[in-house]
Image (cartoon, rainbow, N blue to C red; front, side, top):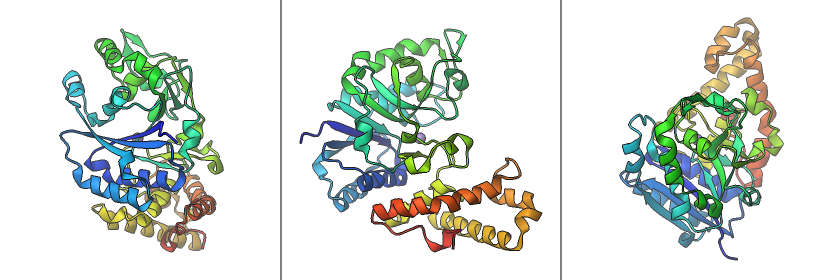
Length: 352
Ligand SMILES: [Mn+2]
């Protein structure tokens, strides 16, 4: 069978562990007979130390090494044009997709994702009539939430706005647009709001993209109202949005427990500096929960409980938080078992 689908990640040294875990989740869940894998990286970044690890991961899951390719990408182009670029320019690597790849269907994934279902199902959702398909942004469902202005006008209050961390691209349709020319055209008239490359993509593809089912990009911890609308049994892809990434700081919640459980068993965790402290925080947090629950302190000292959770919302949030973990342990264990992995470790569980 010809490999006519591309799976693309872009990464730098900071996102090395994230990429390993995300790629591992792809190998565990997806039949990749028709896939090539492409890794874009910043030409100045020298993340070569990760290449060997990535290739070893391919070997472990018997993915042929000749179907994974590393592409150095020149990002100076964007940095020269975007003096206000404060985040990594790496996310602009996705503008190179139409010219660097030749497959008909391209799945782009941020490295801060975990794939929970077979990517073949996602590839099948590739649009025929639109250049790309994506999931509505949970926090910014329409353009106005982004806060940009274009040609002096505020952004649309009705037009849907997508999260660009997961995209299914019809490469031929996308190539017709010429992303670089479109970027140049939009550039002088666009004053950015809260985002960056995601804003450009949304302006360029405004009204010209297909909406994917929400479960293909669940964008926040399940305790967030937006994500709580998602049925976990249907959840197909988790996206660790916000700056608080699991490999850097611990939050005792469902997505973090899953990320760390996977990282341990894929041997990704051992390469992360400071990971022991992160694991320790999860263990401590769980121990405090159990202790407080047993002696009823959660009821008596809700403020203390909230400070442990590093969360500011309403009084009931800590209960919901624990209920979420408890409720979701069975499906996490089931998913891990389907992947022939061990369940969430004892020290992090609330159900025993
Ligand atoms: Mn992301």
